Length: 245
Length: 168
Image (cartoon, rainbow over all chains, first blue to last red; front, top):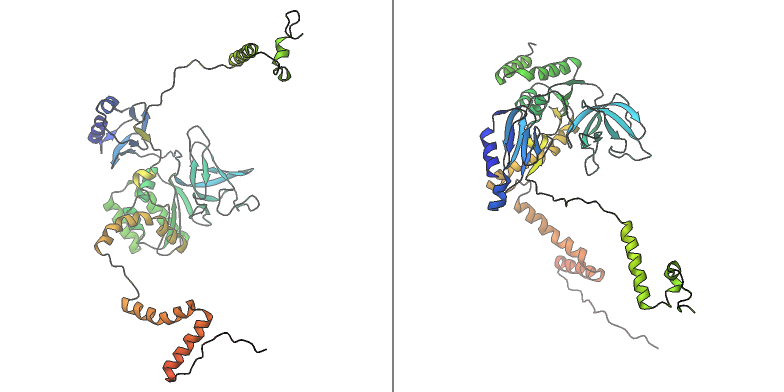
C-alpha cells in the first residue's frame, strides 16, 4: 500500500497519459497486516484488479487523505451520478421526458421527479424547455436518468428555468473553474452588474442580465475566459467595467 | 391379507397418505430414502469453484463534484434574482460553516440583540403572569385579593370555606 501511495505522491502535479499504470502491491498489506486506508480514484483513473490505470491525459491531482483524480481538458460530457446539468427537453414519451444533456445518449426524466408532481398533477414542461437537473442513474451501459428533486423531495432550484437569457457551451474545464469555491472568474464577474447564470457540469452555461446587450457581454466574457491569463482577464474586465467595450 | 407375500401392493400405492398408518417401520424408512433420492436427483447445481470476494482497496468515483468541492450551479449577483441568491446561501452554507468554525472558537460570545440586563428585567415582570397561569382558579382569586391588600392596606377577614350542615 505504501508503494502505491509513494508512487502516486511522486506524480502528483505532473502530467500523466492514458495507459500509465500505478500498481498496487497487496502482498505488503497481507504480510505485514498493515491497516491501510482505501484509495479513492476519481475521474480519469480506472481500477483494474489491483492496478490503477490512467484513462485521461492531464495533471494528476490529490486531495487529502487519499483522493486522486486527473485534471483534464475536454469538451465531451460523460454523465456521472450526482452531477447537476442543464438539459434541453427534446421529446415527451409516455411518462417521461427525453432530455438532451450533451452526452452520448438522451437522458430520461420522469414527470414524477419534479417537486410537488403527482400522477394527477403533471408538471408543465414543454419540448424545448431548459431544465436544471441532477443525474440519479448514470451508468455507461444504461440510459442515464435525471431527477429535478433532491432526496427530501425538494426542488432546491432544480426544474424548468430560463424564460429569456442565452444558453451557450464552454469546455468542461472552464465550467469546473467557474464552479470551484472562491473562483477568481466569478469574483471578477460579480463586480460588473446584476446578472444571473446557471452553470451545468455538462459544459452548458445560461446567462441572463438586464437587456440583451448585457447578457451578450457576460456570455462573451465567459467564452473569452477560456484561454486567458489572470492578468489579461483582469485587464479586459476593467475595460468592460469602464464601459469602453 | 395385506402383507402375506402372495399379493403385494405397489410402491406408489404405499406412498399414499392413507396407507402410511398401517406400514411397518422398515418399509417406511425404505420408502423415505427412495423419495429422498428422487428429490436429490432432480436438483442440479453448477460445478464451479467457490467465488472468493477479495477486499478491494480502490474505490472508483466518476464525478468531479466531490473531488474539487464544486459549488452550487445556479448563481445570481447584485440582487438580480433574490430567490436564487437565497438558494446559493443555503446550498453553499455547509462549506462556509466549516471555515467559520475556527473563527467561532476564538469568540465564543454570540452577537445578541438583547443584553442580559434587558432580559432579566423582562423576565422579572413575567414572573407574576406566569404564576397566575399555573395557579388554579380558586387560588387565582386569592392571588388577586392579595394584591389588593397590598395596594389598599386593608385586611378583609376572609372566612375559611367549610362545609355547612343544612338545617332540617
